[in-house]
Image (cartoon, rainbow, N blue to C red):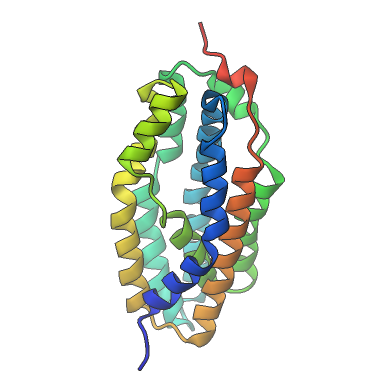
Length: 229
């Protein structure tokens, strides 16, 4: 008896999500917590600003393949739709930092880590030089662990960081479960073969590993932690 495409992919996520969850637990146990919340919010911005261009490139590649690849035709439509779901979220993240009194110019001056560049850059390589279906593994992982209201409340209360800093994080906590359900529906509707599922699995594994390393690479940033007067 065959299993649904989404179940196959979710099983792979479950197998490799442990180190990522451990990285977050270590991050949120830092004392004082206020020193790592701003760098984490900067990391979120760096991830979010890559999302729309990455999916846009995925849609472009799908369009080029569409004449001979029925999967690409249908996949491109999903990427275009999800672009609208994610549009301007990076701007929201910067607005949140500014509203909470943090220095946005300082945030933008922080060089994205090699770990983050590996996380995002690998997706460009795979969709340009192998197949854009691999981007689905990346998206699946990023939408897989929305922060709960209780967790965000705890981080806010323990860190003393103003509530305004957490607006976008809370929005994602509300939206990501819906996005995950849409991902499952899309995976189940797409004509995926064994090779396609293996490609998605490679992307899932890589995304879990390098997102974990990106979180582990975060360090307290004193200059950002000082609020603008």
